[in-house]
Amino acid sequence: MSVYTVRSISDGWRVTKFDGDLNVESSYAVHGTLCECPQASRGYCRHIEILGIFQAASRIDTGWFLDYDKGGEWLPPLKTGEPTSAPVPGELKARPASSPGFQFQGVEGIRRI
Ligand SMILES: [Zn+2]
Image 1 (tube, helix red, strand yellow):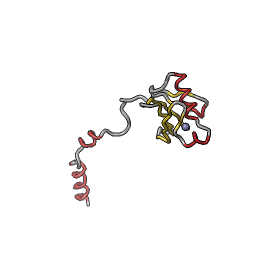
Image 2 (cartoon, protein in one colour; image 1 turned 60 degrees about the vertical axis):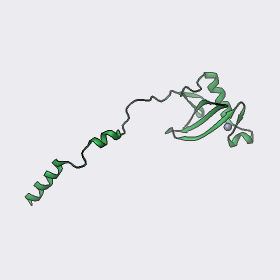
Image 3 (spheres, rainbow, N blue to C red; image 1 turned 120 degrees about the vertical axis):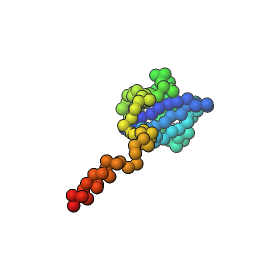
Image 4 (spheres, rainbow, N blue to C red; image 1 turned 120 degrees about the horizontal axis):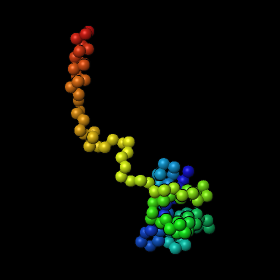
């Protein structure tokens, strides 16, 4: 799966392609009807077409993703500011480096032997 976003830049637009995990696969600037991608010089470029789709839908700079390979299916912008499953660095620092309870259990084990 690959999806695209379009955002405006100072002298045109930037079309960015993402893979299924939303890692950037490629990103090309489009100036008017000229695209900087390698395919453009060979006479075929999908970025101009994708830009046209975003313009028609008024979704430039909105964060919406276009799934071009699925025939132009739209995916909503990512929600930001929500907690993720990844631990917050501050919470990791708040935990003690060593646990007194664990050390006590170790002593008990030695006494049983
Ligand atoms: Zn292109």
